Image 1 (cartoon, rainbow, N blue to C red):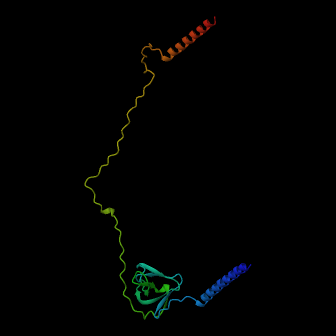
Image 2: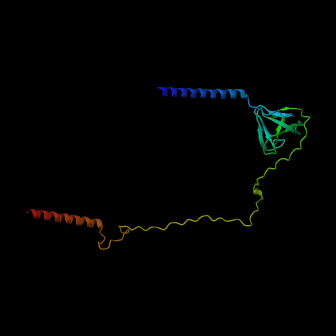
Image 3: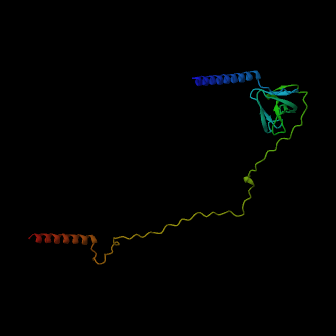
Length: 209
């Protein structure tokens, strides 16, 4: 009985300790507060809005894509590039700090993000050279030189198969059968059958006498 009471006391203490651990872990989580966010740059910066913006290796859509700024993402601005348009309206591209393959910099169009700062106060950045696309050679059919003499293509020839000779039991038309005097074999067979039947009948009658 005493052993049973000790077991119950031990189980109760174990449950009490487990409950205290769970309560202490929850309190620690509640006091930790929200996760620390990235610090806002001290100078001009951009913030991603809406569906975000494409980050390119240069100021223009002809440059390669190197990444994307998502909504709420913040990046410091290094400078600007003003690109003239065909209709006379200038397009402003911003060079930002963007960790990636393009020396940790990238370019975004100012209309696709939220810009904080003064555009006129930004320094002008030299526009990088546009990427050179690899051209695929094409075959020009008009440049093929004609041959001196036309090439004659011989059509395939057809050879008829040889005639297969099959033996026949019937004689050729108008040729008599040797040894029969021109009598058809069927007549001889019928005569033999009749003679045999007649001989058998006579032999049967004589045997009954």
